[in-house]
Length: 211
Image 1 (cartoon, helix red, strand yellow):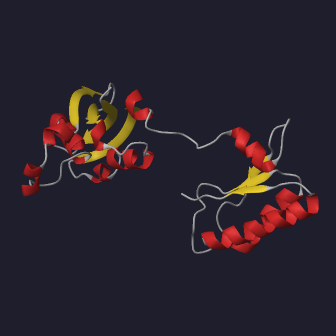
Image 2 (cartoon, rainbow, N blue to C red; image 1 turned 90 degrees about the vertical axis):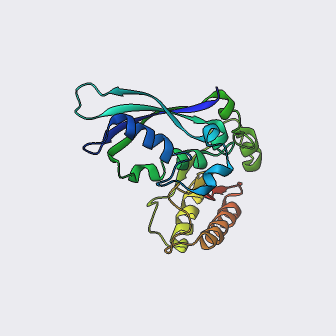
Image 3 (tube, rainbow, N blue to C red; image 1 turned 135 degrees about the horizontal axis):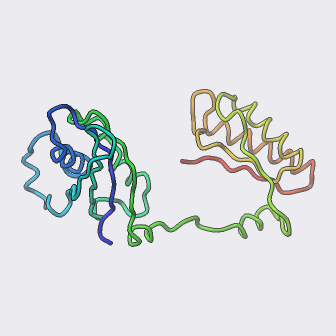
């Protein structure tokens, strides 16, 4: 209940014992670095460091091992998937002592899961905003997801909404790339929503990716 548990498939470099490789993975993905620094003495490394607590060979594979690492919950920001994965699967994959590394499994304790508050509201609020009740909401993701200009993206949004959809949405890959900046997409999507609402008499929506 006090640790996040990760299982890594590790292939050490020739001459590197699996115990050393497992310890290196645990250290590099928590408090360790490539050398000893004087600031190590300013904190309790024993409290915060990851620990490789078990190693077993992969059956049928040469020089491959499953290394089990425990990370104290205090290493992670509450409610942050980004911070958790950046810590566990960040620069450790470029560690020179390893020939190959793969995250095979992750066990997250209930205490950490409870720090994720979830969406601020549910489907009922979306129905209220769209004024749509008694039937499924109908929407789609704009395609192609990458490459459209903001103007053409807005045109696609309009055609979808005018054609009968309740909402459209950005793909998760769409952010603020050179071919379509976020502000430009926002303006053209707003224009598409307003125009389709005026022509259909219905409330329409578009979900913009703000991550």
